[in-house]
Amino acid sequence: MTSATERSAVGTALGSYEQAREWIGRRSKTRQTDVAVDESRCKLFAALSEDSNPAYWDRQWATAQFGAPLAPSGLTMSLIMPLPWKPGGGSSSPPSLAVEVPLPGQTFINVDTDCEFLRPILWGDHFSVYEEIVHIGPEKTTRLGCGHFVTTCMNLLDAQGRLVARLTNVLYRYEAAPA
Image (cartoon, rainbow, N blue to C red; front, side, top):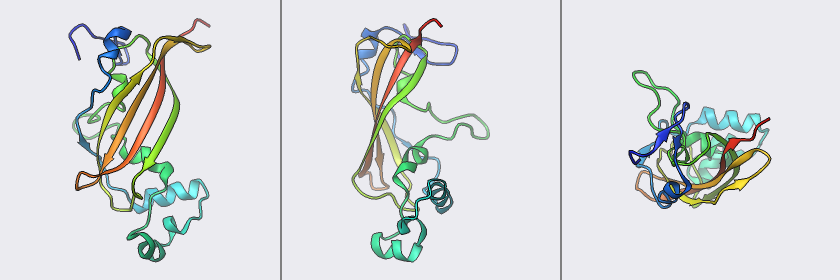
């Protein structure tokens, strides 16, 4: 972040569209996820979504088919998000590199998320992850207010450093229109 970048009251980096465009291609540091994929979280998600897929419920069947039971794909984002608090000093990293981009606007709304899996996510997997700024669109005015679409790509790597999945996310970062 440059010294010319300011921060909003909620910690969002503020700056110009020109400053933000310099961030295209920038990557976060690679970090380890806080927890491994575990049975309880996978089964709770499958139960809440009433998904009876035996790959999430039947350990013996799933192990024979895939080598281990699978994590539901809809659970992926929560598996890689940093814990919001840890004893001795808060979260280890911001929830998204998009809040670090110097842009006008302090409000975010998620527009689109797309997940591409190169292999299934298994119980016991532990990942490292990095995020990259892919695109920052020019200013748009919507009913919400004036802002920019920011596209990021979160890359999940296995213990051997191989790409497991890509999560491409688009959010609209804006200054709310007067009510």
